[in-house]
Structure formats: structure tokens, C-alpha cells
Image 1 (cartoon, rainbow, N blue to C red):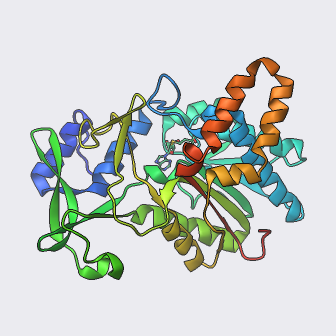
Image 2: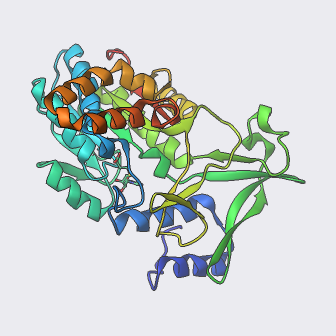
Length: 347
Ligand code: SAH
């Protein structure tokens, strides 16, 4: 929702009032308001929460991210460089990665981009000495390694829907506090890539101007200050048709238009568009690979083997975590990895 002085009562009532006063709002405003409330008021992660992320499944995930960062730092000539993480959740990934980096001889300052006060407190326990920022622009100048796991999927999206009379922006209307998506104003055909314009009625096309904005700011910083970013999320190489807006509550799918602010709203990330945004700022983008391919290349099997040797009684659990993270039919295939770097930085 646009910044509004209306802070009275529960969020659904506030959104409903805004719609009553000014008409249906964009999916992006709805999603932005819902997620800001959602993350600011709880720890959503883990068995007792709504969803589980890769670093919460196994320490192997954060450790391999740390190994990636340490290798890059080493090949770049061991410069003075800081660790920046976007949306660090409980701080588990940062703690596991920083431990491996320290073992390689690099004690990095940690800068965490996080808006939720609840999660900032949890991160402080796991990452002592961290410094927090509200957005990507604020970490101080100088080379940086950036990590973002399941961050971009939480950023607002815009949806266009193909109707009998052309493409329209999908907006959120409401009746009482029952929200529903409806086709809003018509958009120019040029908003839709030529190969998708004649899609069947009902087709949905998603874009995320917020994600592109964050990616451009990040790439700009990398090009000026040096460094690289690793982006991991579920997604596809678009633009492509499909409605991927989803709500998750208590580890199950829920209706995204019910109880805004009480469930996690996400959308799949368009990695091709993110890579293009980085390239537009002069950065270099890797090809997009699956999480399974990336973890295999980073040596997840060797890491799992070492963990099992050190904890033989946890063999089953470690093998299950390895499988959940890397198997193509599980997170290994659904999640994608993109690296973006300043020109001249090691590949
Ligand atoms: N990376 C973590 C957590 C993913 S959940 C993990 O892998 O476990 C999404 C994270 O992004 C949360 O920490 C949430 O508070 C944060 N977040 C969501 N929207 C944000 C925004 N607009 N600005 C900054 N942080 C945001």
C-alpha cells in the first residue's frame, strides 16, 4: 500500500479501507503491505513456523555458500571485503558461511539488509557484531560479497491478465474484508513481450519492478566498488506466462487473498530478467544453474561424507538433508542460482 497515515486496527481492515476510499489496489501494493506486516511480527521459519529454508535444513548449505565466498575472496587476491546478506532470516546462513570463511583466513564484517525487528534480534544472536541496513544502498562503500537466499521471492510483483479486450493489470478489490483479484485498467500491448501478446484469455504475466530495482542497485554497487553476488531462489528464466503468487501457512498452501499479513506471500523469481538488469548496469552475470547443480559443483557430497564421518549416528538425517537440498525432483531442481560480479572479478 502507498504510505498511508491509516494505522488504526488490523491490517486487513486497513487494506479494505484503502480500497474503499481509492478503489482496487495493485497486487504489488497488496503483497508489499501483507509481507511487511508478516515479517515484522514473527519468526516464520522452522517446524513451528510456516516454512523451512535451505539453511534451516542443514548447515551444509551455509557452509558451501561460505566456501564459494572464501574461494572468490582468495582468487581476487584476498582484498578487504565485507559480507552482505539480503533477508537473512534467523541468521543461520550467515553464521554457517562466516564460520567457513573465518577458517579460510577471512574474518569479514557482516552487513545485514533486514527490515523486520523480530528477525534482526534473532540475527544478532547468531551473527555477533553485525551491522543492519534497511536497503541495499546503505552498506558502506568498498568491495562486497552479497548473498540472497529466498529474498527476491518475497518482493512484490505486478500481474497482467489477458482478457477478451486485451491485457489489463490485475488488481485487488474487496467486499467487506474478503479480497479478490479483478482485471483493472487496460495496459498498452508494449508492456507484454511480443511472443506472449496473443496468449489465451485468462493468461497471467508477472513482473517484479521492485526486484529489478534491487538488482540494479546491487549491480551498480558491485560495478563501482567491486565484488560479487549469489542469488538463490525458486524461479524460472522468463518472461513466461503463469500465476505463481502463493501463500504459505503452517507448511501448506493457503489462499493469498485471505488474511493478508498472516501468511507468507511469494512469487517465483524471473532469473533471466534479474540477470538482464545486472548486465544493464555493467555487471557480469553467470548462467543460471539449478541449486542441485550448484551444490554438486561446490562439493555437497564430500561435505556430507565428512559430516557423516564426524557424526556416524546422524547418517540418515544428513543423507536426507543432502537429498532434500540437491535432488532434482526436490529443492535441487526447483531452486536456481545466479551469480553476478563486477567486471574483472574471478568467475
Ligand atoms: N534468507 C533466509 C530467510 C528467507 S525469508 C533463509 O534462507 O532462511 C525472507 C527474508 O527477507 C526475511 O528475513 C525477511 O524479513 C526479509 N525481507 C522480506 N522483505 C524484505 C524487504 N523488502 N527488505 C528487507 N528484507 C526483507
